[in-house]
Length: 507
Length: 119
Image 1 (cartoon, rainbow over the protein chains, first blue to last red):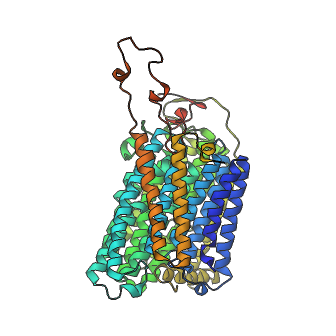
Image 2: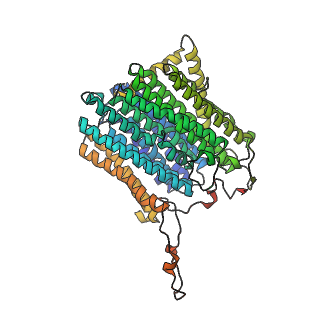
Image 3: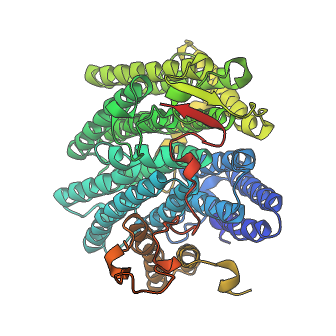
């Protein structure tokens, strides 16, 4: 029985049925998509908790282990929240059937990418997610969104061609497309290093790591409709980073050359992304650049798009450390997965909250924004929670990223992380101040009364903020305590198992 | 229900083809994985891959670099009969794949229907 594919197939069913339902009435499309996303999440959770994971068969590379399930669960969960958020945010959208079709396909292909140990299937999912994600960017209906989508496609094709070269090399070396450590045992070390580097760079284009990320990521993530931005930043780039970690650790489980390359890319991303996020928040696109619009702005979503370049840098640093210090790779891979969870939730939350500001004020440019004050309601708090979590502040989940990173890493890496965290903190506080109390820099007149805050816009933010706070506080207290709490121990055990599952089918 | 009832513009036909090849490709990959047939699996990977190149080449590039109309090409020294320029010859950019007009009111990163800005 092809159990591993069931959640993905449910998402494909969501694509077809929500499109058909959308031709009858827009609300039917929403309910169909939400119901099938929920069903996919439930089945994935059931696979997680009910059966022992190792009991599931490997179907030609589609394989369920704790790490794959964890990433798929996280992908579908953020997909469901984006689906709920879209109900109000995309209420003006005439072609809602097509929108939910593409959203479902996008999430389905990302989940499939996470579940696979077959590089060819990862490649196909990578391309399919690019098509669905790229078309979703166009739903903003601006000329700049077309330019952003074009950059996204062009860079993805560049990445795909590099990966394709790697796939051909892998098949020449091993005669297989599977990412299995046994297949690479007899391959010369130099060829394994070359193959790992090809995958790290090829997927790096999609991850959005420095320097490729700066070209396409800020335009694409900021031009897309907000629920799609949350998926692009919170999920897509991280699933691609997961593919890098999986491929590199299978092919070169111990390699300082590959590890060093990946760490250098990661550090450059971490610092440049956070710096540009702060510059965007303070000075705008005139100084931060990488803008595809016809007028310079201080884009609220551009801040968090730049921040994504920074956060994926941490994922690369963890991967590089796991490659260099292979005996304790579990620690760094657990850090990788925890940071993935932290960044995914916090970034989706920041985009959702930015979307609330945009929806209420009809303005994406902070220079034109009249602060919403207390009318932002819970989002005043949730925005700060997410921003603090990305700034690695103790008491938030971000602190766990810091803890794992500092467990062995060298002072230069700590310093890079601290500098990036400081820039992210500045970006968060500066943009929060503008959303709360901002004054327009030019003369602005609001022609329509302020809309009421819709529950479907707030529910995803509140849920994510609650999870970030509960997990952050519980794990910070647990990790600082001499005797870890049972909850903390259970999380540590789970993360250790998941960390092994990043590169091992048995994990 | 034919394609013509769903797609009203060439851009929408492109969207249908892109999404169809994407869906067939990925579902085919999953089915071929379960069946364990490598040749079929590889073929479906190619089908998926084609959808990305198709979207870039046919829909997006043509949108960003549209066909321009040369005014002198339709000017006959006043001897021409109306209409001097047919509707399809007029430069009317549309959103690639969605086949709709751009939302001009959002171009400045604010909604001109709800906000008035004096720069």
